[in-house]
Amino acid sequence: MQRPFYGWLIVGVAAVTAFSHVSFFNPVLGVFVQPLSEEFGWSRATIAAAITIGSVGGAIASPLIGPLLDRGASRLVIAAGGALMGVCLLAVAFTPSVWWFYLFYSVGRATAVGITSLGVTVVISNWFVRNRGVALGITLLGSRAAMALLPLSAQLIILAVSWRAAFGMLGVMVLCLAVLPSLRFLRHRPEDMGLLPDGLPGRASAGDTDEPAQDDLEEEWTLREAARTPALWLLTLATSQIFLVGGAVNLHQMPHLVDQGLSSTVAVGVISTFAVFGGIGGVLSGLIQRRLGARWTLAASLVGTASGLVVLINADNVGLAYFYGVWYGLAFGSMVTMMTVVYAEYFGRQSLGSIRGAVAPIQMAFNAVGPLLAGWAFDVSGSYLEVFWAYAGLLLLSAFWMVLAPRPRRGGLATG
Image (cartoon, rainbow, N blue to C red; front, side, top):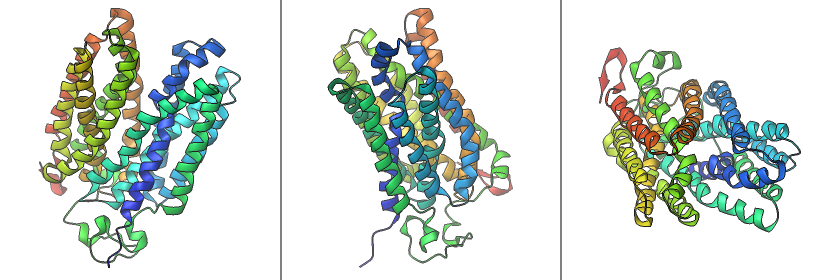
């Protein structure tokens, strides 16, 4: 009897890691805003600055971490990143001042967005080719589940004990989920275990870099070679605009729904619906990508996400708000999965860490700017409507960039 492909265990470990690093994402910190403000008198801008500082740190770290991932250090990078995140959360629980908070929260945030998230997506892309979209979709179910569960769990602990206990709980959870499973089970590539990607029949030596079974599936590009193709820069422009819009909407969708006349209870329910259907959309997009390819699946997802923003703009009743949560969640989950798959599909596995690490600073800069622009627009106009319309237009523009970015081929040729 043939043993199950080890790559699916890798997917499970990666999903658990993805679950844990959501501890440093915007929806979780949002739960701590009020108790931190009450205890220290900090403004919301003061607290949010920790996210911006951490995102800048992640942008600096990514180009350094990418080459390490390509050299086979995925297990150590992810485990060390998980340990650092856990320690930072435990330290935040003892915060005496804003500078202490900035130091440890920002370091943890930089690790989450610039190290562990990059490591997780690279290692999954190494283990799968034909099933890469499905595998990454399942992996991102971990982060979607965390989006739904961690804010609620933290809120319950804050109400029952304190915000310090909630940060401590998150720290212990990260140490258990992101460190031990990674050290025990993660492997960089299937070739390290004498296997081939996707569990294809045959054996591969641990040092085999020719991978003859994969030549018909994808070409391997170095960072220098990829940088000479228009496709890389069109992909980076398209995905950077996604980072800008996604970061802004994730932070501001709840206050917008409340501004539309909905209760905070309904708004939280809509956000949870968005998180659940985001996970479903990620898996479904992997199945669709097998037939359409990542390029066209991503383009379609971008159009769907833009239309979801139009629904959000007009969501002034419970039914329309929940429809937004379902529709935008499906499209957003698909979009997030495909913008990860597309780099591996275009440029292969060998230098994926270096390529993704090189473009990450651009993406994270856009991600840091998006929420600030939306907040500034609200302060000026008293509404999110204009900026959300603009962001919907940016998503459609990203879809256009994808139309202009066929998969590069050697000799200057490209296929759609």
